[in-house]
Length: 491
Image 1 (tube, rainbow, N blue to C red):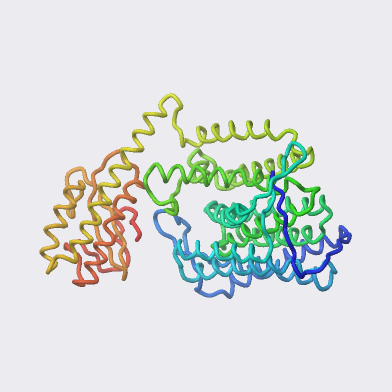
Image 2 (image 1 turned 30 degrees about the vertical axis):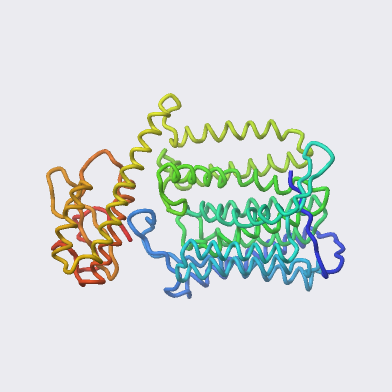
């Protein structure tokens, strides 16, 4: 079990004081009001910046929706923290490292909401923010024995373990932010869990800031529950995740809360399991772990017949139950930890079967072989896509490339013109152009064909750059695809 040893250099002593129920209600209610008003202002005065445009693959909302929902949450928590520090007398100097780094991580996500930065740039920003917090003295330095006395100093392992904690939690929260109200609701439950830990350990500052975050998320959820009028965006998701990760280090500082980080891990059971499923799924399929898909737990529940509201309620119930399980383990000093671990492992296996990630245990090997065959097919497409991309540079004119392009398509089982038993798909290119490809009508699901056909986009984009034209008469000059064609494949 984790017991971070946090050093506060040149910050002075801090004497805790009692926080009344009225003060708790004021911090929660005040943050709720500020976040709700801020969200309302963005919806009515935010203009056209930071909009999430729908597509026909994963973003199926009917109109463009703002992704700036993290801004009012950040404002509400910041104001509540200032009030607690300057007026409430709870002290604020020891929170400077956490406040600065939460502002930094929010800025990384918020800039991405305005103009995409790319996964690598965001990861660098996350690691940099975590390194700053570590350098300011907030770190996991000790692993304590959950079943008795004794502990082990981590030494140089303190750095990678702290970075792993501070970087993984924001990404886990961001990964589940694919359904209206899901990430915000989970953040609300986790913030209330942190508030209880602060109350239980006699740390009123932890209690207050956690209640402020819970109130801010409650105000935001008024507009984010299905059907959502506004999204968290990366800024909001990163802020929630980093807040949970960094504040949990504070709740773990006192010896009476030895298992605070373990409580958070258990409470994060659903998003952690979803992340694990996604990593395994994408690794087996041979795609990047950053490649978004529509096979998360909430997607699977909807495929099983749940409404959006029903799926959300079910996931909320599981999150609440896991939070209570984590708190109960904390209060009984980890005695039931092995049994709870075994139960959670069996539940994870049952969940994988129920959601259809594993169709049948008896036919698991067959399913795995089918998946590997799809991976080989995708790698074949990817290799030909790269060859066609290089051929654009080598060809002197478009006509020369068309011959090679047609040959490559034939090798992939595709065509530029309708064939018997073929299905048209539209590739959306830059500048509002589209290109039609005809693929075989087979049992391969549409998402798999999307992954395969995406490999053609770089070569087609290069054609536009080099020759200002595409390799067939199938080019569609209008910004919109023809109404009689199926969903498009977006670059």
